[in-house]
Length: 331
Image (tube, rainbow, N blue to C red; front, side):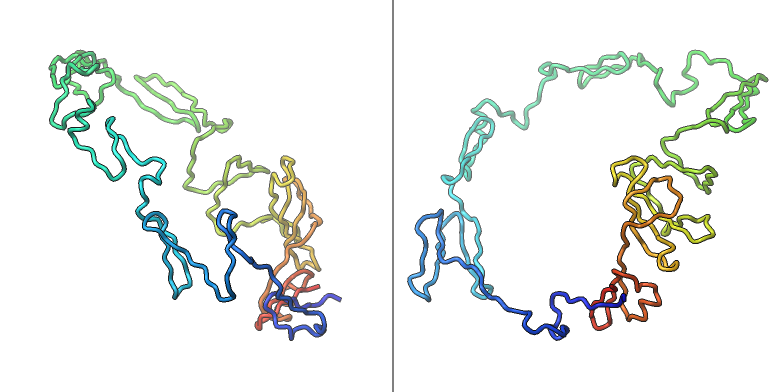
């Protein structure tokens, strides 16, 4: 007969067991180091049972400090000598100096790699010393007022500056006689243009934003996207059913077969229609029938056995936690 059985966890009082006599033992044996060494040489062995181990520090490099109150040793690095470094110098403009040393401007100038901050570079010394705008070439720091620029890409150019003005078109209008058709009427002549958005077309959009509702009256929606974001807090599955039946979510790619996978299913008929969340190891994405679960998901309630029964949790594998912290499993 299924009932609630108590579960013992780490920290439980031994008094919770009714038949614990002779079953518990205590072991305190453990391994310990008996010596210490540096680089595997000259093992350090205490001279007496109260001998101490001292750590000494030098004037530079690794410095040791201790805190008696915190029982700790701190390692820090300070004043590392240059001789202990792999690279103990730097080179600036071909002039070498050691770390901590200095280089004068005269020394850098003597190397031939120094340019005075007050010096100016002559335009003739620059390989490309002109700029070109619309076919007009101007030297650096020069000017040219010749109006020879190409205005084919110009914007906001004054209308009055045009050499000739084209003939204007009068009596023009645009309308849409039907969905997806634009009609251009120019000087009394009408021309219809198919925009590819008529009722029989299948247009594609890079981005589409709908300010109203979207109603799909087909049998299937394919959302071929990398990630699907749903702003709603709740999702209703099997919304059109007026009878008790299973529903769930199929996780594609979990079985290695396209259009199928493992599923998280609500087994509606479980235990006289109590219903229970279950796992189906393999099912197709287009399956519409009720499924036989491979195993069930365990639930937890905090309260009493009566609370568990009222909330239909008194099913095998579920867990009950009492107000005193005791844990029970229904088996």
